[in-house]
Length: 327
Image (cartoon, rainbow, N blue to C red; front, side, top):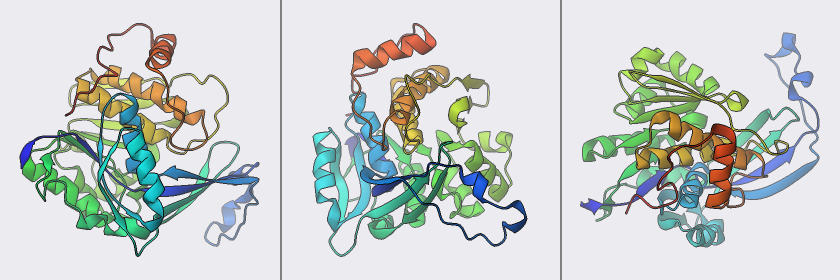
């Protein structure tokens, strides 16, 4: 392999179809008939936006001055998307376009309480397992994040990282329902961090049979997000409760908020910030996404971000936050 390279972001590349339901989903489920659900929700609006975990996370990193490289698969309808990503400062040399397939699609309805019901069409993502992180003369990644993707890819990439000695973050999130307990154990082994939301963490624990303490014997840090209640970062020695940053207005759309959190958290890790500081940076990045429609919100300026950080968490040493770390 060549010398140390950039941050590599793996995961889905998708178009998101965002729909808004004006009521509450829970009001339309009958507790005594959950074994036979048949319900339809009439939505007020629908928008098609650029999405997918890999571009969302890479976009977040690019806002902090990095030039992440996406390694992922997309379909013949993604040429414009690829050009847009390149214009945002993202390396798309590892984004493979398949002319015989469509790009993956994410269909999600959000109710007034920010609850979501979603479906995902795999499309070209199903071929992500054919891609390698370290083959074909590629530069050795500085870091890798393994985010939701084709299950074969999510099995392959952690193994490649371990064999190459590349630090990686394991983020199974939306794929915890598809991955087996054995798959999850294999994926998280040796990860610098495991990240998921509180519901997904419950599924990971159930499928693997591993407690928090068991997981901390396998990973460097366990990061669990709790929506509007913030997040928790645990290491073998410490536990950090990360408060949520305050909204400036109303919550608009939760799609991609977790990805915004992940991109900013990884930037803090690259900078070598303490875990509690990295978590607070991620908390601020997350609310920018929550206040916008779609998972790639308008870019924030460094001054606005730093000012918002101070408003929420006071003064902190954020030297180099907007300067590149990885080559």
